[in-house]
Amino acid sequence: MTTTTPAIIVDEAKGPFRQGTVERRDLRPDDVRIAVAYAGICHSDIHQAREEWGEALFPMVPGHEIAGTVTEVGSDVTRFAVGDAVGVGCMVDSCGECEMCRSDHENFCEKGSVPTYNGENYDGEVAMGGYSQEIVVSERFTLRIPEGIPLDQAAPLLCAGVTTFTPLQRWVKGPEDKVAVVGMGGLGHMAVKIAAAMGTEVTVLSQTTSKEEDGKAFGATDYRATSEDSTWEDLEGSFDVIVCTVSADLPVDKYLGLLKPFGTFVNVGLPENAQSVHFGSLIMGDKTLTGSNIGGIKGTQEMLDFCAEHGIGATVEVIGADEVDRAYDDVVGSKVRYRYVIDVSTITPAG
Ligand code: NAP
Ligand code: ZN
Image (cartoon, rainbow, N blue to C red; front, side, top):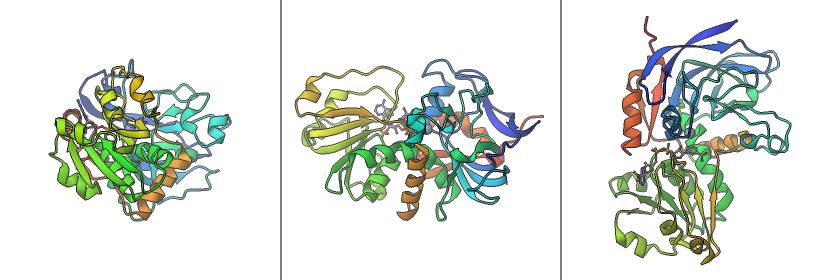
């Protein structure tokens, strides 16, 4: 027995979206049923729906930035009740027993964590994501959205928020560190807000200065265009930490030149192609080049609580179910200000 819920579906790589329905399982004892209110559009949705990261599972319902309200709880659920504001991010299950799960890094589960979509549950069922009106998830992978963050602004925190909070929390030593954020889209604008809330001086490195006013309103003290030669000259050796959120090819060596000795370039953007680096760029200054993958469930809750404490939400543009194709093109064209969030109540399955 399952229930049917309206959803936004793509049937093939690069295909158009349509409005239809998908099935949700009946509640297991540890499950909660969530009425989804908003689902954010992450660039990772686009990479997967367009098969830029390799073969994907179709039909696909993307969406791993989910915010809504609990409507039903299973018999063993202890942490949530009907009416609670909750979120779901990039994972919906993990083994719960391995070293990584036990140390709150479910995203690196040895059995492989179950992604919210474009993957299979442990029982072989294909997971369907948040561009839908309802989702059923184990309470272990359900996050509490604190009071004070509206659901539309909360949804993007479940991926863009945690993906930038995790490396900032790990690599920024204190407010004295100078931080740069490369790319000010969905992830980048959250990185600016979070780094500023941590008390650091933040510089945005964007393709142009067209979003400078917004960057400064988000808390940046400086905003520079990577298209200008003077940016690279002026900022050489300036930063302790650079968080890079760019979804496209990147001149990595040039960015490493902007780090102070012992500085860290942490990449969260995941472009389609491999990038190259000259080891001299790391050796001259003992620099660290690293990556960061979302975050665990405990870290995601910490991020949500941090955002509530500092009055941070995502800056969003709410769209209807029939605008997803256009929104994808806008995100790829760096036109998003700063996260599209789908109001899933507008889904009207054909027929
Ligand atoms: P987004 O909203 O499209 O932002 C990406 C930004 O990169 C753009 O706003 C733009 O910033 C810059 N950019 C785009 N094309 C560029 C180009 N050709 N050259 C230079 N800069 C360019 O995307 P997002 O949702 O923030 O995601 C960013 C990346 O992170 C994606 O690859 C996504 O898959 C990845 N991601 C990784 C994780 C993880 O766990 N590591 C989690 C989520 C997402 P400006 O306009 O300011 O130049
Ligand atoms: Zn994402």
